Image 1: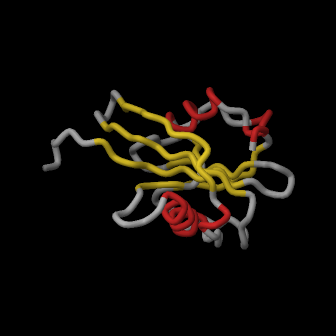
Image 2 (image 1 turned 135 degrees about the horizontal axis):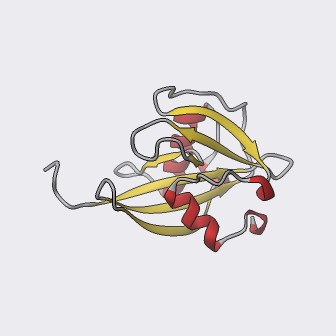
Length: 140
């Protein structure tokens, strides 16, 4: 089944602090290595979009987020030509969290940084880049 052509569901959670900066992580995994993206991952069977986004954020950053504080902003459809992977990514938003971002998965993320909308890194992970082509973070 490893070479089956399937479409996966990904989640990305744009977390905003009190200064309206967004949290992005520098990817270390083979898929998107060296690019920046919000916390996220794969949706799991039986969970809501909001539950999945809150779970992934906690697993990756240690931040505690209530699914009730997460909203769906947009959906992107991305085919990664180099790997042959196809993802539908749910781009989620929250302004409420508890804690400070930490590196919880050092094999996947080199660091977490807060960015102003006008000073985002140019090397964004493809789903995030596609989302940001359509939306300004100031909309949220």
